[in-house]
Length: 328
Ligand SMILES: [Zn+2]
Figure 1 (cartoon, rainbow, N blue to C red):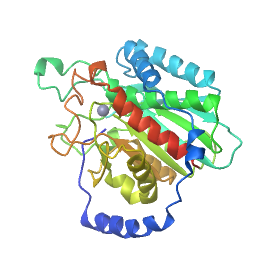
Figure 2: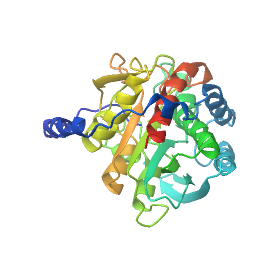
Figure 3: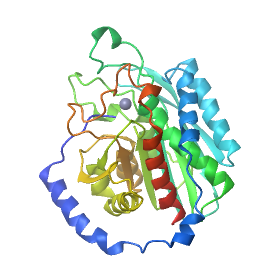
């Protein structure tokens, strides 16, 4: 994804106006008895799902690792009882490369009309263009956090849904070709060179007229001590969903991860889900206001490896999502 931007003042004004109405629609909290019946998110299991993706090697489109990982992800979703669609598309990258991309979609309880969309990107970046060492910059990113972590959390949720379905229908989309965007030093504005898989899906949904009540995107959700701020595009398009998720995280005692403050505006897959599909979608993404990039030190470097995957962070994110979904 592209580094945080700052929204123009008019958008900020809209954000403020939207936020005023959000608190009125808060739901009452579920009883303790109800919560006991929620499945328990296993960070160990999510960790293994991340490790398996990383073991294929960087999942860069047009590589063998990418093909093999796609087959693995489809197989796992089927194993957990999802109806799986593999949406293949040839997508043109900013440099003219034709990417053989595939969005992998798993639908649970497909006849249920109330649906929630959960998504993450599964590809990895072909270059470590933010590595401090110039000799590393031609290498592909391992993408343990940037890619595999969001998918790992969703696979663990898929496993739990397979055992104990929530009352709503869930669609999971693993978007391809998110991270093939133009390097930061590109001369022209190439914001739309990122998120090619989600742009394609938003224009060509896997079902005609596909709707979901809302969407949640996960990206870089596993670093030790990660902080997730209220991302500005999410606040603009889906302030009530941001409120719902951050409030649930605070209530569960994860307020040190889900910081109740405004973060940057990040070009990520949720932008196109919001803008093109019209489905309100938020992004849970690590944001570090102290760092130059706005992201973790490992971002787009050779250090985006399993050493930067932390089970406590996975537990915070996964447990929050389980509570949000099973309260619907
Ligand atoms: Zn990235």
